[in-house]
Amino acid sequence: MGMKDQMQEKAGQFQQQAKQRAQQGKEQLQNRGRRRDDEQDPRRRRESEERFDQDHEV
View 1 (cartoon, helix red, strand yellow):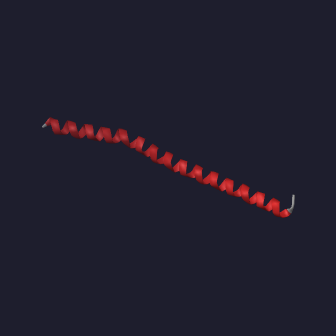
View 2 (cartoon, one colour):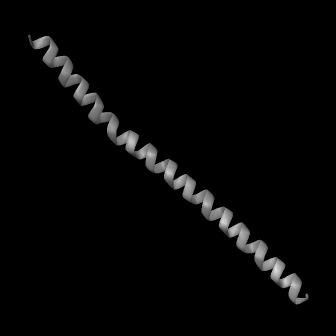
View 3 (tube, one colour):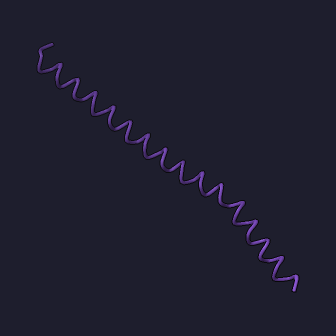
């Protein structure tokens, strides 16, 4: 294998690794967003229940 072939192979490997890292980064961001939504749901539910209770106490 010549030097040129080795360099092209290395470049291809680097591109693959970069694509994989980019994909992993996207997935992590999406998962973070989902986690935030999951964490906020109980708070939202509790707040709406409290408002409902306050409205019906009067």
